[in-house]
Image (cartoon, rainbow, N blue to C red; front, side):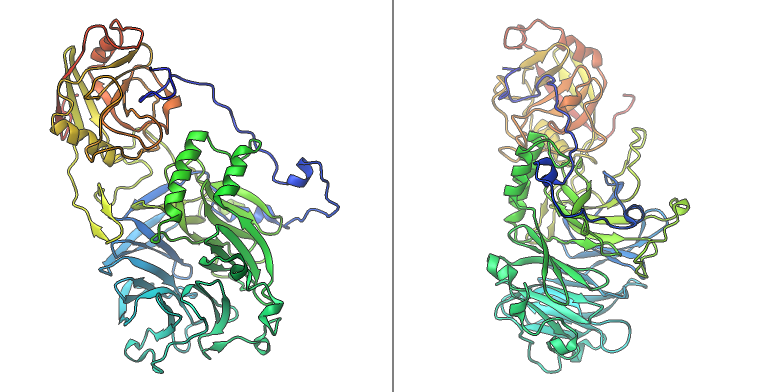
Length: 625
Protein backbone atom coordinates (compact mmCIF):
# COMPACT_ATOMS: atom_id res chain seq x y z
CA UNK A 1 0.00 0.00 0.00
CA UNK A 2 2.59 2.66 0.95
CA UNK A 3 4.65 2.27 -2.21
CA UNK A 4 1.75 2.13 -4.63
CA UNK A 5 0.96 5.30 -6.60
CA UNK A 6 -2.70 5.17 -5.60
CA UNK A 7 -2.01 5.22 -1.87
CA UNK A 8 -3.62 7.97 0.21
CA UNK A 9 -0.37 9.43 1.53
CA UNK A 10 3.16 10.53 0.64
CA UNK A 11 5.39 8.35 -1.52
CA UNK A 12 9.12 7.70 -1.14
CA UNK A 13 11.43 9.74 -3.42
CA UNK A 14 11.65 9.21 -7.16
CA UNK A 15 14.24 10.54 -9.55
CA UNK A 16 13.00 13.79 -11.08
CA UNK A 17 13.69 14.77 -14.64
CA UNK A 18 15.25 18.21 -15.01
CA UNK A 19 13.69 20.30 -17.76
CA UNK A 20 16.16 21.61 -20.33
CA UNK A 21 15.72 24.98 -21.96
CA UNK A 22 15.42 24.96 -25.73
CA UNK A 23 15.35 27.83 -28.17
CA UNK A 24 11.96 29.18 -29.25
CA UNK A 25 12.79 29.28 -32.95
CA UNK A 26 10.94 26.14 -34.07
CA UNK A 27 11.76 26.26 -37.83
CA UNK A 28 15.48 25.81 -37.18
CA UNK A 29 14.95 23.05 -34.62
CA UNK A 30 12.74 21.19 -37.10
CA UNK A 31 15.32 21.45 -39.84
CA UNK A 32 13.39 24.09 -41.78
CA UNK A 33 15.86 26.95 -42.22
CA UNK A 34 14.22 30.24 -43.00
CA UNK A 35 15.45 32.44 -45.77
CA UNK A 36 14.33 35.51 -43.83
CA UNK A 37 16.77 37.24 -41.54
CA UNK A 38 15.86 36.97 -37.90
CA UNK A 39 14.49 40.24 -36.53
CA UNK A 40 16.45 41.98 -33.81
CA UNK A 41 15.27 44.64 -31.37
CA UNK A 42 18.01 47.27 -30.94
CA UNK A 43 18.89 48.01 -27.31
CA UNK A 44 16.89 44.98 -26.11
CA UNK A 45 19.11 44.50 -23.06
CA UNK A 46 18.66 48.14 -22.05
CA UNK A 47 14.90 47.86 -22.36
CA UNK A 48 14.87 44.70 -20.25
CA UNK A 49 16.95 46.40 -17.54
CA UNK A 50 14.01 48.77 -16.98
CA UNK A 51 11.51 45.96 -16.46
CA UNK A 52 10.62 43.80 -13.42
CA UNK A 53 11.56 40.30 -14.52
CA UNK A 54 12.05 38.30 -11.31
CA UNK A 55 11.08 34.64 -11.33
CA UNK A 56 9.18 34.94 -8.03
CA UNK A 57 7.04 37.64 -6.49
CA UNK A 58 8.88 39.61 -3.82
CA UNK A 59 5.93 40.68 -1.64
CA UNK A 60 2.18 40.25 -1.39
CA UNK A 61 -0.46 42.23 0.50
CA UNK A 62 -3.98 41.36 1.60
CA UNK A 63 -7.59 42.35 1.15
CA UNK A 64 -10.32 40.72 3.19
CA UNK A 65 -11.76 39.14 0.06
CA UNK A 66 -10.79 38.07 -3.45
CA UNK A 67 -8.73 40.78 -5.20
CA UNK A 68 -10.25 41.21 -8.65
CA UNK A 69 -8.65 44.39 -10.06
CA UNK A 70 -5.33 46.23 -9.94
CA UNK A 71 -4.36 49.54 -11.57
CA UNK A 72 -1.46 51.98 -11.51
CA UNK A 73 -1.46 55.76 -11.98
CA UNK A 74 1.95 56.62 -13.51
CA UNK A 75 2.03 60.39 -13.00
CA UNK A 76 0.96 60.29 -9.35
CA UNK A 77 2.68 56.93 -8.67
CA UNK A 78 -0.25 55.43 -6.79
CA UNK A 79 -1.26 51.80 -7.01
CA UNK A 80 -4.95 50.96 -6.55
CA UNK A 81 -6.43 47.55 -5.74
CA UNK A 82 -10.05 46.43 -5.52
CA UNK A 83 -11.73 43.31 -4.17
CA UNK A 84 -15.01 41.55 -4.76
CA UNK A 85 -16.47 42.83 -1.48
CA UNK A 86 -16.49 46.42 -2.82
CA UNK A 87 -13.31 47.62 -1.09
CA UNK A 88 -10.87 49.97 -2.89
CA UNK A 89 -7.36 50.49 -1.45
CA UNK A 90 -4.77 53.14 -2.34
CA UNK A 91 -1.04 52.43 -2.02
CA UNK A 92 1.80 54.90 -2.59
CA UNK A 93 4.80 53.66 -4.59
CA UNK A 94 8.03 54.30 -2.74
CA UNK A 95 11.66 53.90 -3.70
CA UNK A 96 11.38 50.24 -2.72
CA UNK A 97 7.96 48.67 -2.38
CA UNK A 98 4.65 50.32 -1.56
CA UNK A 99 3.03 51.94 1.47
CA UNK A 100 -0.64 51.76 2.37
CA UNK A 101 -2.44 55.11 2.11
CA UNK A 102 -6.21 54.70 2.45
CA UNK A 103 -9.11 52.35 1.84
CA UNK A 104 -12.81 52.77 1.08
CA UNK A 105 -15.76 50.44 1.42
CA UNK A 106 -16.87 51.89 -1.88
CA UNK A 107 -19.66 49.52 -2.94
CA UNK A 108 -22.19 47.07 -1.58
CA UNK A 109 -21.80 44.76 -4.57
CA UNK A 110 -18.81 43.30 -6.45
CA UNK A 111 -16.57 45.71 -8.36
CA UNK A 112 -16.60 44.97 -12.09
CA UNK A 113 -14.27 47.75 -13.24
CA UNK A 114 -11.37 49.80 -11.86
CA UNK A 115 -10.23 52.51 -14.29
CA UNK A 116 -7.42 55.08 -14.00
CA UNK A 117 -7.36 58.03 -16.42
CA UNK A 118 -4.44 58.33 -18.84
CA UNK A 119 -3.05 61.34 -16.98
CA UNK A 120 -3.21 59.45 -13.70
CA UNK A 121 -5.34 62.06 -11.93
CA UNK A 122 -8.64 60.20 -11.59
CA UNK A 123 -9.74 56.70 -10.68
CA UNK A 124 -13.24 55.24 -10.96
CA UNK A 125 -14.63 52.04 -9.50
CA UNK A 126 -17.71 50.56 -11.15
CA UNK A 127 -19.89 48.05 -9.34
CA UNK A 128 -22.69 45.65 -10.11
CA UNK A 129 -24.75 47.56 -7.55
CA UNK A 130 -25.16 50.21 -10.33
CA UNK A 131 -22.97 52.83 -8.69
CA UNK A 132 -19.73 54.53 -9.71
CA UNK A 133 -17.30 56.08 -7.23
CA UNK A 134 -14.80 58.64 -8.50
CA UNK A 135 -11.52 59.34 -6.68
CA UNK A 136 -8.87 62.03 -6.93
CA UNK A 137 -5.73 59.90 -7.03
CA UNK A 138 -3.21 62.46 -5.78
CA UNK A 139 -5.20 63.14 -2.60
CA UNK A 140 -6.83 59.66 -2.56
CA UNK A 141 -10.16 61.34 -1.78
CA UNK A 142 -13.56 60.30 -3.11
CA UNK A 143 -14.85 63.29 -5.09
CA UNK A 144 -18.03 61.97 -6.65
CA UNK A 145 -20.66 59.27 -6.88
CA UNK A 146 -22.86 58.43 -9.86
CA UNK A 147 -25.99 56.30 -9.54
CA UNK A 148 -26.82 54.41 -12.73
CA UNK A 149 -30.26 53.39 -13.91
CA UNK A 150 -28.87 50.31 -15.66
CA UNK A 151 -26.51 47.45 -14.83
CA UNK A 152 -23.01 48.40 -16.04
CA UNK A 153 -21.02 46.15 -18.32
CA UNK A 154 -17.56 47.73 -18.68
CA UNK A 155 -16.00 51.19 -18.47
CA UNK A 156 -13.04 53.35 -19.49
CA UNK A 157 -12.04 57.01 -19.33
CA UNK A 158 -12.62 59.13 -22.42
CA UNK A 159 -10.56 62.29 -22.11
CA UNK A 160 -6.99 63.51 -22.54
CA UNK A 161 -5.10 66.00 -20.39
CA UNK A 162 -6.77 68.35 -17.94
CA UNK A 163 -8.73 70.62 -20.27
CA UNK A 164 -12.35 70.09 -21.23
CA UNK A 165 -14.86 67.65 -19.83
CA UNK A 166 -13.52 64.60 -18.02
CA UNK A 167 -15.70 61.86 -19.44
CA UNK A 168 -16.15 58.39 -17.99
CA UNK A 169 -17.53 55.95 -20.56
CA UNK A 170 -19.83 53.17 -19.28
CA UNK A 171 -21.56 50.45 -21.28
CA UNK A 172 -24.81 48.62 -20.54
CA UNK A 173 -24.51 44.96 -19.62
CA UNK A 174 -27.84 43.97 -21.16
CA UNK A 175 -27.97 46.31 -24.14
CA UNK A 176 -25.76 47.97 -26.80
CA UNK A 177 -25.96 51.43 -25.22
CA UNK A 178 -22.89 53.44 -24.17
CA UNK A 179 -23.16 56.36 -21.73
CA UNK A 180 -20.83 59.32 -21.15
CA UNK A 181 -20.56 60.95 -17.73
CA UNK A 182 -18.77 64.17 -16.92
CA UNK A 183 -17.42 63.23 -13.49
CA UNK A 184 -16.99 66.88 -12.47
CA UNK A 185 -20.70 67.47 -13.06
CA UNK A 186 -22.40 64.11 -12.43
CA UNK A 187 -25.88 65.61 -12.04
CA UNK A 188 -25.89 66.80 -15.65
CA UNK A 189 -23.46 64.28 -17.06
CA UNK A 190 -25.51 62.72 -19.83
CA UNK A 191 -27.33 65.81 -21.08
CA UNK A 192 -28.66 64.29 -24.29
CA UNK A 193 -30.42 61.61 -22.18
CA UNK A 194 -29.88 59.04 -24.94
CA UNK A 195 -27.24 56.34 -24.99
CA UNK A 196 -24.72 56.20 -27.81
CA UNK A 197 -25.13 53.15 -29.98
CA UNK A 198 -22.23 52.10 -32.17
CA UNK A 199 -22.88 48.38 -31.66
CA UNK A 200 -25.75 45.97 -32.17
CA UNK A 201 -25.05 43.94 -29.02
CA UNK A 202 -23.72 44.67 -25.50
CA UNK A 203 -20.23 46.14 -25.33
CA UNK A 204 -17.92 43.81 -23.38
CA UNK A 205 -14.57 45.66 -23.46
CA UNK A 206 -13.36 49.23 -24.04
CA UNK A 207 -10.10 51.17 -23.86
CA UNK A 208 -9.16 54.80 -24.55
CA UNK A 209 -6.41 55.60 -27.09
CA UNK A 210 -4.89 58.69 -25.53
CA UNK A 211 -2.72 59.51 -28.57
CA UNK A 212 -5.60 59.54 -31.06
CA UNK A 213 -8.25 60.58 -28.51
CA UNK A 214 -10.71 57.83 -29.32
CA UNK A 215 -12.27 54.81 -27.67
CA UNK A 216 -11.78 51.28 -28.99
CA UNK A 217 -14.82 49.21 -28.10
CA UNK A 218 -15.91 45.67 -28.91
CA UNK A 219 -19.21 43.87 -28.36
CA UNK A 220 -20.37 40.37 -27.56
CA UNK A 221 -20.47 39.47 -31.26
CA UNK A 222 -16.82 40.48 -31.76
CA UNK A 223 -17.33 43.75 -33.67
CA UNK A 224 -14.59 46.36 -33.03
CA UNK A 225 -15.27 50.09 -33.42
CA UNK A 226 -13.27 53.32 -33.09
CA UNK A 227 -15.22 56.36 -31.90
CA UNK A 228 -14.60 59.77 -30.35
CA UNK A 229 -16.07 60.76 -26.94
CA UNK A 230 -15.79 64.47 -27.81
CA UNK A 231 -17.70 64.29 -31.12
CA UNK A 232 -19.70 61.16 -30.18
CA UNK A 233 -19.19 59.86 -33.69
CA UNK A 234 -17.24 57.05 -35.30
CA UNK A 235 -13.67 57.93 -36.24
CA UNK A 236 -13.28 58.22 -40.03
CA UNK A 237 -10.50 58.27 -42.60
CA UNK A 238 -10.43 62.07 -42.62
CA UNK A 239 -9.70 61.92 -38.87
CA UNK A 240 -6.35 60.29 -39.61
CA UNK A 241 -7.13 56.60 -40.08
CA UNK A 242 -5.39 54.70 -42.88
CA UNK A 243 -8.59 53.04 -44.09
CA UNK A 244 -11.95 54.20 -45.35
CA UNK A 245 -13.82 50.94 -44.92
CA UNK A 246 -13.54 48.31 -42.21
CA UNK A 247 -13.63 45.65 -44.95
CA UNK A 248 -10.06 46.69 -45.74
CA UNK A 249 -8.98 45.88 -42.18
CA UNK A 250 -8.84 42.88 -39.86
CA UNK A 251 -11.22 44.39 -37.32
CA UNK A 252 -13.69 41.60 -38.06
CA UNK A 253 -11.20 38.96 -36.82
CA UNK A 254 -13.13 38.28 -33.62
CA UNK A 255 -16.41 37.95 -35.48
CA UNK A 256 -14.85 35.52 -37.97
CA UNK A 257 -13.52 33.44 -35.09
CA UNK A 258 -16.94 33.61 -33.38
CA UNK A 259 -15.43 34.82 -30.14
CA UNK A 260 -15.61 37.87 -27.90
CA UNK A 261 -13.05 39.99 -26.09
CA UNK A 262 -12.19 39.69 -22.40
CA UNK A 263 -10.03 42.82 -22.31
CA UNK A 264 -8.30 45.40 -24.50
CA UNK A 265 -4.99 47.07 -23.78
CA UNK A 266 -3.37 49.84 -25.83
CA UNK A 267 0.33 50.67 -26.20
CA UNK A 268 1.18 54.05 -24.70
CA UNK A 269 2.15 55.54 -28.06
CA UNK A 270 -1.24 54.48 -29.45
CA UNK A 271 0.20 52.62 -32.44
CA UNK A 272 -1.13 49.17 -31.54
CA UNK A 273 -3.52 47.38 -29.22
CA UNK A 274 -3.95 43.82 -27.98
CA UNK A 275 -7.20 41.92 -27.42
CA UNK A 276 -7.48 38.88 -25.16
CA UNK A 277 -10.52 36.91 -26.28
CA UNK A 278 -12.70 34.10 -25.00
CA UNK A 279 -11.02 31.58 -27.35
CA UNK A 280 -7.86 32.13 -25.27
CA UNK A 281 -5.98 33.87 -28.04
CA UNK A 282 -4.30 37.26 -27.96
CA UNK A 283 -4.64 39.27 -31.16
CA UNK A 284 -2.31 42.20 -31.76
CA UNK A 285 -3.66 44.94 -34.07
CA UNK A 286 -2.05 48.02 -35.63
CA UNK A 287 -4.30 50.94 -34.79
CA UNK A 288 -4.22 53.20 -37.86
CA UNK A 289 -4.89 50.56 -40.52
CA UNK A 290 -6.62 47.96 -38.32
CA UNK A 291 -4.31 45.21 -39.53
CA UNK A 292 -3.79 42.06 -37.48
CA UNK A 293 -0.08 41.81 -36.67
CA UNK A 294 0.02 38.48 -34.82
CA UNK A 295 -2.10 35.93 -33.00
CA UNK A 296 -0.81 34.29 -29.81
CA UNK A 297 -2.48 30.99 -28.92
CA UNK A 298 -2.75 30.45 -25.14
CA UNK A 299 -5.54 27.87 -25.28
CA UNK A 300 -5.58 24.73 -23.16
CA UNK A 301 -4.97 22.64 -26.28
CA UNK A 302 -1.84 24.66 -27.02
CA UNK A 303 -0.61 24.30 -23.43
CA UNK A 304 -1.18 20.54 -23.52
CA UNK A 305 0.74 20.26 -26.80
CA UNK A 306 3.69 22.02 -25.19
CA UNK A 307 3.59 19.67 -22.20
CA UNK A 308 3.78 16.67 -24.56
CA UNK A 309 6.60 18.14 -26.65
CA UNK A 310 10.31 18.15 -25.92
CA UNK A 311 11.37 19.68 -22.57
CA UNK A 312 11.36 23.47 -22.58
CA UNK A 313 11.08 26.49 -20.33
CA UNK A 314 7.29 26.12 -20.54
CA UNK A 315 6.98 22.55 -19.27
CA UNK A 316 5.73 21.65 -15.80
CA UNK A 317 5.82 18.62 -13.56
CA UNK A 318 2.83 16.43 -14.56
CA UNK A 319 1.20 16.69 -11.12
CA UNK A 320 1.72 20.44 -11.03
CA UNK A 321 0.35 20.79 -14.56
CA UNK A 322 -2.73 18.71 -13.70
CA UNK A 323 -3.46 20.92 -10.70
CA UNK A 324 -3.07 24.10 -12.76
CA UNK A 325 -5.20 22.70 -15.55
CA UNK A 326 -8.08 22.03 -13.16
CA UNK A 327 -7.85 25.59 -11.83
CA UNK A 328 -7.67 26.94 -15.38
CA UNK A 329 -10.87 25.23 -16.39
CA UNK A 330 -12.61 26.64 -13.33
CA UNK A 331 -11.35 30.15 -14.13
CA UNK A 332 -12.49 30.03 -17.75
CA UNK A 333 -15.98 29.00 -16.70
CA UNK A 334 -16.22 31.72 -14.03
CA UNK A 335 -18.08 34.86 -15.21
CA UNK A 336 -16.66 36.80 -12.23
CA UNK A 337 -13.04 36.27 -13.28
CA UNK A 338 -11.27 39.33 -14.70
CA UNK A 339 -8.16 39.41 -16.88
CA UNK A 340 -5.85 42.16 -18.12
CA UNK A 341 -2.54 42.63 -19.94
CA UNK A 342 -0.11 45.54 -20.23
CA UNK A 343 2.52 46.95 -22.59
CA UNK A 344 5.78 48.35 -21.32
CA UNK A 345 6.42 52.09 -21.84
CA UNK A 346 8.30 51.50 -25.11
CA UNK A 347 5.57 49.31 -26.60
CA UNK A 348 8.11 46.62 -27.53
CA UNK A 349 7.06 44.13 -24.83
CA UNK A 350 3.68 42.70 -23.84
CA UNK A 351 3.03 41.24 -20.37
CA UNK A 352 0.17 38.75 -20.22
CA UNK A 353 -0.95 36.06 -17.71
CA UNK A 354 -1.15 32.40 -18.71
CA UNK A 355 -1.72 29.00 -17.15
CA UNK A 356 2.01 28.53 -16.50
CA UNK A 357 2.91 32.06 -15.41
CA UNK A 358 3.26 35.62 -16.73
CA UNK A 359 4.85 35.75 -20.16
CA UNK A 360 6.86 38.73 -21.39
CA UNK A 361 6.80 38.75 -25.19
CA UNK A 362 9.22 40.73 -27.36
CA UNK A 363 6.87 41.92 -30.10
CA UNK A 364 9.73 42.57 -32.53
CA UNK A 365 11.45 39.19 -32.32
CA UNK A 366 8.28 37.28 -31.40
CA UNK A 367 10.22 35.66 -28.55
CA UNK A 368 9.15 35.11 -24.94
CA UNK A 369 12.03 36.74 -23.08
CA UNK A 370 10.80 35.86 -19.62
CA UNK A 371 8.35 33.56 -17.88
CA UNK A 372 7.59 35.08 -14.48
CA UNK A 373 5.90 33.24 -11.65
CA UNK A 374 6.25 29.76 -13.09
CA UNK A 375 7.41 28.48 -9.71
CA UNK A 376 4.40 30.07 -7.98
CA UNK A 377 2.30 27.01 -8.58
CA UNK A 378 -0.57 27.93 -6.25
CA UNK A 379 -1.39 31.26 -7.91
CA UNK A 380 -3.05 31.73 -11.29
CA UNK A 381 -2.25 35.38 -12.07
CA UNK A 382 -5.04 37.32 -13.78
CA UNK A 383 -4.83 41.14 -13.78
CA UNK A 384 -1.60 43.08 -14.35
CA UNK A 385 -0.47 46.68 -13.83
CA UNK A 386 3.06 47.88 -14.59
CA UNK A 387 5.17 50.61 -13.02
CA UNK A 388 8.42 51.69 -14.68
CA UNK A 389 10.73 54.33 -13.18
CA UNK A 390 10.70 57.52 -15.19
CA UNK A 391 7.84 56.34 -17.41
CA UNK A 392 6.08 59.71 -17.30
CA UNK A 393 7.75 60.38 -20.63
CA UNK A 394 7.93 57.71 -23.30
CA UNK A 395 11.48 56.83 -24.30
CA UNK A 396 12.07 55.22 -27.67
CA UNK A 397 15.75 54.61 -26.92
CA UNK A 398 16.28 53.88 -23.22
CA UNK A 399 18.84 55.91 -21.33
CA UNK A 400 18.85 53.71 -18.25
CA UNK A 401 21.82 54.22 -15.98
CA UNK A 402 22.69 50.80 -14.56
CA UNK A 403 24.52 52.46 -11.68
CA UNK A 404 21.17 53.70 -10.38
CA UNK A 405 19.53 50.29 -10.20
CA UNK A 406 19.46 50.39 -6.41
CA UNK A 407 17.17 53.43 -6.50
CA UNK A 408 14.87 52.48 -9.36
CA UNK A 409 12.22 49.90 -8.57
CA UNK A 410 10.21 48.73 -11.58
CA UNK A 411 7.26 46.70 -10.32
CA UNK A 412 4.57 44.50 -11.82
CA UNK A 413 1.39 44.37 -9.72
CA UNK A 414 -0.75 41.25 -10.14
CA UNK A 415 -3.96 39.77 -8.84
CA UNK A 416 -4.59 36.02 -8.81
CA UNK A 417 -7.70 33.92 -9.21
CA UNK A 418 -9.65 33.50 -5.94
CA UNK A 419 -6.81 34.96 -3.88
CA UNK A 420 -7.24 37.59 -1.17
CA UNK A 421 -3.84 39.03 -2.09
CA UNK A 422 -2.11 41.01 -4.78
CA UNK A 423 1.50 40.32 -5.69
CA UNK A 424 4.54 42.47 -6.49
CA UNK A 425 7.15 41.29 -8.99
CA UNK A 426 10.31 43.42 -9.01
CA UNK A 427 13.89 42.98 -10.17
CA UNK A 428 14.67 41.28 -6.86
CA UNK A 429 13.96 37.72 -5.84
CA UNK A 430 12.41 37.36 -2.35
CA UNK A 431 14.70 36.99 0.63
CA UNK A 432 13.53 33.76 2.23
CA UNK A 433 14.71 33.90 5.84
CA UNK A 434 13.28 31.25 8.15
CA UNK A 435 13.83 33.56 11.12
CA UNK A 436 11.39 36.01 9.54
CA UNK A 437 7.99 34.95 10.85
CA UNK A 438 6.13 37.11 8.32
CA UNK A 439 8.08 36.34 5.15
CA UNK A 440 7.14 37.85 1.83
CA UNK A 441 3.37 37.49 2.40
CA UNK A 442 2.40 40.49 4.50
CA UNK A 443 -0.59 39.91 6.81
CA UNK A 444 -1.99 43.42 6.79
CA UNK A 445 -5.50 41.96 7.26
CA UNK A 446 -6.83 39.16 9.42
CA UNK A 447 -7.01 36.13 7.12
CA UNK A 448 -10.51 35.12 6.05
CA UNK A 449 -11.04 31.38 6.24
CA UNK A 450 -13.80 31.39 3.62
CA UNK A 451 -15.33 33.90 1.26
CA UNK A 452 -18.52 34.40 -0.68
CA UNK A 453 -17.18 35.78 -3.92
CA UNK A 454 -20.47 35.87 -5.80
CA UNK A 455 -22.29 37.99 -3.26
CA UNK A 456 -19.30 39.93 -1.89
CA UNK A 457 -20.15 38.99 1.73
CA UNK A 458 -17.16 38.69 4.05
CA UNK A 459 -16.99 35.58 6.20
CA UNK A 460 -16.39 35.89 9.94
CA UNK A 461 -12.80 35.83 11.14
CA UNK A 462 -12.07 32.62 13.05
CA UNK A 463 -9.37 32.55 15.75
CA UNK A 464 -7.24 29.58 14.78
CA UNK A 465 -4.88 27.77 17.18
CA UNK A 466 -1.14 28.08 16.82
CA UNK A 467 -0.28 24.87 18.60
CA UNK A 468 -1.52 21.39 19.42
CA UNK A 469 -0.51 18.43 21.58
CA UNK A 470 -1.09 14.89 20.31
CA UNK A 471 -1.57 12.68 23.36
CA UNK A 472 -0.65 9.19 22.12
CA UNK A 473 -0.25 5.81 23.79
CA UNK A 474 3.54 6.29 23.55
CA UNK A 475 3.68 9.88 24.80
CA UNK A 476 2.91 13.48 23.85
CA UNK A 477 3.88 15.17 20.59
CA UNK A 478 3.88 19.00 20.67
CA UNK A 479 3.12 20.69 17.36
CA UNK A 480 3.46 24.29 16.20
CA UNK A 481 0.74 25.15 13.65
CA UNK A 482 0.84 27.80 10.91
CA UNK A 483 -2.63 29.40 10.63
CA UNK A 484 -1.30 32.58 8.97
CA UNK A 485 0.34 30.71 6.12
CA UNK A 486 -2.21 27.88 5.58
CA UNK A 487 -5.42 28.91 7.40
CA UNK A 488 -7.77 26.47 5.72
CA UNK A 489 -5.61 23.42 6.45
CA UNK A 490 -5.17 24.44 10.09
CA UNK A 491 -8.91 25.11 10.42
CA UNK A 492 -9.68 21.63 9.11
CA UNK A 493 -7.28 19.99 11.57
CA UNK A 494 -8.46 22.09 14.52
CA UNK A 495 -12.17 21.57 13.79
CA UNK A 496 -11.79 17.79 13.53
CA UNK A 497 -9.74 17.76 16.74
CA UNK A 498 -12.39 19.80 18.60
CA UNK A 499 -15.08 17.36 17.48
CA UNK A 500 -13.02 14.45 18.81
CA UNK A 501 -12.70 12.90 15.36
CA UNK A 502 -9.07 11.94 16.07
CA UNK A 503 -9.73 10.40 19.48
CA UNK A 504 -8.79 6.72 19.44
CA UNK A 505 -7.51 6.84 15.84
CA UNK A 506 -4.51 4.58 15.16
CA UNK A 507 -1.22 5.18 13.37
CA UNK A 508 -2.02 2.92 10.45
CA UNK A 509 1.08 3.46 8.28
CA UNK A 510 4.66 3.63 9.56
CA UNK A 511 7.75 3.57 7.33
CA UNK A 512 11.09 3.75 9.08
CA UNK A 513 13.32 6.47 7.66
CA UNK A 514 10.31 8.17 6.05
CA UNK A 515 7.20 9.06 8.07
CA UNK A 516 4.36 8.02 10.42
CA UNK A 517 0.77 8.47 9.24
CA UNK A 518 -2.57 8.68 11.07
CA UNK A 519 -5.91 10.50 11.03
CA UNK A 520 -8.11 7.89 9.33
CA UNK A 521 -11.20 7.03 11.43
CA UNK A 522 -11.47 3.73 9.55
CA UNK A 523 -7.90 2.88 10.48
CA UNK A 524 -6.86 1.46 7.09
CA UNK A 525 -5.81 4.56 5.12
CA UNK A 526 -8.87 4.68 2.87
CA UNK A 527 -11.22 6.94 4.83
CA UNK A 528 -11.57 10.31 6.48
CA UNK A 529 -13.36 13.47 5.36
CA UNK A 530 -12.57 17.11 5.93
CA UNK A 531 -14.53 19.20 8.45
CA UNK A 532 -16.62 20.51 5.54
CA UNK A 533 -17.37 17.03 4.22
CA UNK A 534 -15.56 15.46 1.29
CA UNK A 535 -12.17 16.82 0.22
CA UNK A 536 -10.57 20.26 0.07
CA UNK A 537 -7.87 21.87 -2.02
CA UNK A 538 -4.13 21.94 -1.37
CA UNK A 539 -2.61 24.91 0.42
CA UNK A 540 1.09 25.62 -0.14
CA UNK A 541 3.33 28.34 1.26
CA UNK A 542 6.82 29.18 0.10
CA UNK A 543 8.26 29.14 3.63
CA UNK A 544 6.78 25.73 4.53
CA UNK A 545 8.77 22.86 3.06
CA UNK A 546 9.49 19.22 3.85
CA UNK A 547 13.10 20.25 4.51
CA UNK A 548 13.55 18.78 7.99
CA UNK A 549 12.42 15.88 10.20
CA UNK A 550 9.22 16.17 12.27
CA UNK A 551 7.27 18.14 9.67
CA UNK A 552 3.46 17.91 9.95
CA UNK A 553 1.75 17.56 6.57
CA UNK A 554 -1.53 16.46 4.97
CA UNK A 555 -1.88 13.02 3.40
CA UNK A 556 -3.74 12.84 0.10
CA UNK A 557 -4.47 10.67 -2.91
CA UNK A 558 -3.49 13.32 -5.46
CA UNK A 559 -3.96 17.07 -6.00
CA UNK A 560 -6.75 18.71 -3.96
CA UNK A 561 -7.86 15.50 -2.21
CA UNK A 562 -7.18 16.43 1.42
CA UNK A 563 -9.45 14.92 4.06
CA UNK A 564 -8.57 14.10 7.67
CA UNK A 565 -5.35 12.09 7.34
CA UNK A 566 -1.97 13.59 8.14
CA UNK A 567 1.60 12.43 8.70
CA UNK A 568 4.80 13.50 10.48
CA UNK A 569 8.09 13.06 8.63
CA UNK A 570 11.11 11.36 10.23
CA UNK A 571 13.70 12.76 7.78
CA UNK A 572 13.81 15.60 5.23
CA UNK A 573 11.49 14.67 2.32
CA UNK A 574 11.89 17.46 -0.30
CA UNK A 575 10.21 15.43 -3.06
CA UNK A 576 6.90 15.99 -1.24
CA UNK A 577 7.08 19.79 -1.62
CA UNK A 578 4.08 21.27 -3.45
CA UNK A 579 2.39 17.87 -3.39
CA UNK A 580 1.41 17.69 0.29
CA UNK A 581 0.34 20.69 2.39
CA UNK A 582 2.71 21.43 5.29
CA UNK A 583 0.81 22.97 8.23
CA UNK A 584 2.96 22.37 11.31
CA UNK A 585 6.24 21.30 12.93
CA UNK A 586 6.98 19.07 15.90
CA UNK A 587 8.72 21.23 18.52
CA UNK A 588 8.77 18.73 21.39
CA UNK A 589 8.20 15.00 21.56
CA UNK A 590 10.41 14.10 18.63
CA UNK A 591 11.51 11.08 20.65
CA UNK A 592 7.89 9.89 20.62
CA UNK A 593 7.78 10.21 16.82
CA UNK A 594 11.05 8.26 16.64
CA UNK A 595 9.63 5.59 18.95
CA UNK A 596 6.60 5.20 16.67
CA UNK A 597 8.90 5.08 13.64
CA UNK A 598 10.86 2.16 15.12
CA UNK A 599 7.96 -0.11 16.11
CA UNK A 600 7.52 -3.47 14.45
CA UNK A 601 5.27 -3.37 11.35
CA UNK A 602 3.72 -5.96 9.04
CA UNK A 603 4.22 -6.16 5.29
CA UNK A 604 1.62 -3.41 4.81
CA UNK A 605 3.61 -1.01 7.05
CA UNK A 606 0.96 -1.29 9.77
CA UNK A 607 2.24 -1.49 13.37
CA UNK A 608 1.86 -4.98 14.85
CA UNK A 609 0.79 -3.46 18.17
CA UNK A 610 -1.70 -0.60 17.85
CA UNK A 611 -0.52 2.92 18.63
CA UNK A 612 -3.38 5.36 19.13
CA UNK A 613 -4.07 9.06 19.47
CA UNK A 614 -5.85 9.36 22.80
CA UNK A 615 -6.96 12.94 22.10
CA UNK A 616 -5.64 16.28 20.84
CA UNK A 617 -5.32 19.47 22.90
CA UNK A 618 -5.36 22.74 20.93
CA UNK A 619 -3.28 25.71 22.10
CA UNK A 620 -3.44 29.39 21.16
CA UNK A 621 0.24 29.55 22.09
CA UNK A 622 2.89 26.91 22.78
CA UNK A 623 4.53 27.79 26.10
CA UNK A 624 7.91 26.30 27.00
CA UNK A 625 7.79 24.16 23.88
